[in-house]
Every structure is written in C-alpha cells, then in structure tokens.
Image (cartoon, rainbow, N blue to C red):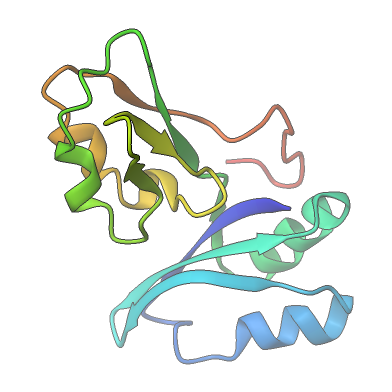
Amino acid sequence: MARILLKFSEHIVSKPIVSEVILELEVPITIVTAQLNSKGGEVLAEVPEETLDKVVEAFRKKGVEVRLPKLIEVDKEKCINCGSCVALCPVEAITLIEDCSIVFNKEKCVGSTCSACVDACPARAIKSVKQNNHEVHSNRP
C-alpha cells in the first residue's frame, strides 16, 4: 500500500470526492487520518501500490492537491532511548519495549503530516524520509 496526502481547498471540501474516486476507479482507499472543516483540510489515505498513478490523477482532476508524505525513521546509532517521542506519538507508532529501546512501526506512522517525534527528539535521531522510490508521474507539481 502507498500513502497519499490529499489536500482539499475550501471550495471543494464539501464534495464527496473520495467516494467518487472509489466508485469511479473501483479501488479501495483506506483513510488513515483526516482533518477537515469548512475551510478545507487534509486526508492521509492508503491506496494499492499498483493503482497509485491513476488514483493520484483522478484526485488531481477533481481539484485535490496530492502529495506523497514522508515517513519517519529512527537512527538507532543516535537514539538515546529517552522516550520523548513515545509520549507524543498520536497513533502509537513508536513504543518503548522491555529492554528500554525504541521500536518504530512504519505501518502505524502517519509521517510528515504529524512529525511530533522529530521535533521532540533531543538527540535528533528521528528524521522524515521518503516513503518509497515510487514516483507519481501524473500532473506532478
């Protein structure tokens, strides 16, 4: 699965665009997180890797800005296992295990849409990284 970040302007946020894309393309889209109001907002979604280009193109045709968010990565050499990042993670993607080391779960991470752990790390052991090498070619900004 590939993660995409959908940014909706206030002009289109009230339209059922995600539902339309799902029905038109017959592609499953999982909403990971969403923050929307009458002024616009963002939706972090997962789509099958093999349909990424056509899903991105469909959203862009409907006026949605699409980005591939970055994930977060922990540099084990720099990490001092202080736990500062654990408490701030809203999706529990970072945990402290029995031996007092940090475990990072990329499947749960919402990436650069959050990045609370990046700012919290006193050792600067956490950074944003690209989610994969897949490039989205359609109407690339």
